[in-house]
Image (cartoon, rainbow, N blue to C red):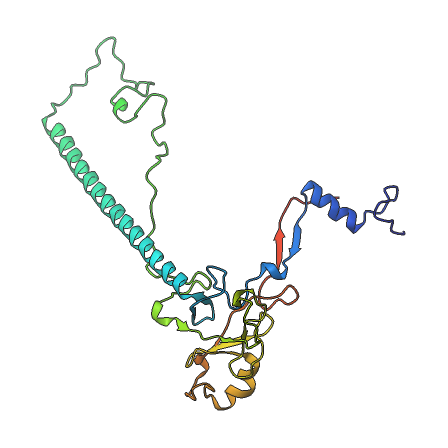
Length: 290
């Protein structure tokens, strides 16, 4: 069976183009879209502000932040944690007070029942004419009106009590990795500016802004890079594999290095390479069954 053209409506073939067009117009089916370069964060941009860093710092996991932004984030989170802890302590104290009051009421009820039983005279069971020993059908007699709150309301109705708060996490966590983050663990980053003799264009408007501190290769989202903890300089991973790992010396200040001193910089990606990031946006929808 041959396929028909896009604008042909007399054929029996339901083409891919027609199916995609019907899905976009009707809203049925899952929609997928590949993100372009303008939708991906640049490697030298802050993970919070999404703008090029003025005072860049990096975490142990390689996430880059602007120093002012991450300090503001940590301070805000500490205030929020302190507020939640205060509310949790109030709730804990309130629950303790309520438990003590319930215990006092139970003790008073026990004393009242005991005193009423001891002072109560023994009842004489006599079968007088006109009296019946059968229990009453009504649920409001024989003292049951004190147990039930109302004639038509059940005894075990759900109670909408106050919201119970859980104990908050006292650690400030990284917004990207979710691991605990401390200000003393942040490492200052020193980017090497590109020397292109262009003094009129601002650095933020340049496509190529920084280069490797050793090989002068242009850095970008398509170039894997790493931060050296001993000097804070940014070099390419190619330089790390071919030059630095041979002697494990920092080429900037000749300090001895270990594997932990090489922090792989988490970067974005272009629209043609994944680089560990998901570049496809997907929205689930109702499917049409044939």
